Image (cartoon, rainbow, N blue to C red; front, side, top):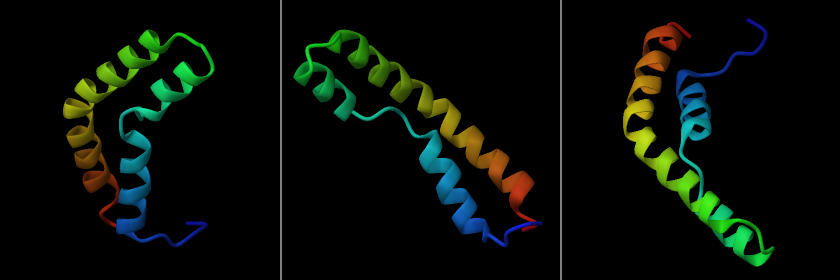
Length: 68
């Protein structure tokens, strides 16, 4: 292994990357006169899907990276 990274660090990095889109995207779209409804839909859908995907990603991390 090239880098020695703890299980906790890997878990935090991967789970943070897997979190849903931020509401800041909607605010920026409104500020720059872009399609804020599309951004709102993106935040909504990614938040709903995260209810399923985040636990699955955590199980994946726990199964494959526990030996680190």
